[in-house]
Length: 146
Image (tube, rainbow, N blue to C red):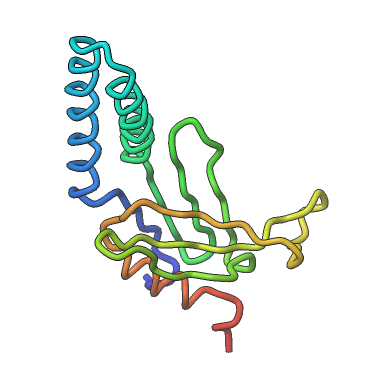
């Protein structure tokens, strides 16, 4: 089967799961310290780290798939992003230590037509095989057609 038409699934990198776990553990520790000390500074740190931990744990359940025509990115508690190849406008790698895909696309209007006046972005978590996914998405972009 053609590489372009093969459905591939992508999950977060193992290091991303480790980061989520470490933030969850830090939240538990900060919560216990805030409870013991009762100081406002400890509660502020606890709330801040807990917020980051919850977002990272939820993001660790993110899933992406691409079949050569449609890219779908799912994260818990959010509506899935569904982007057809005609909507793709930007695919790049962002970040320094934990590089992750950033995908820009033109949304569809009420009639289902692609509108180039607006652009939306998907900031993916670091995915296993994201280099290969990036290559496949770049090949599928409308500007790459011959």
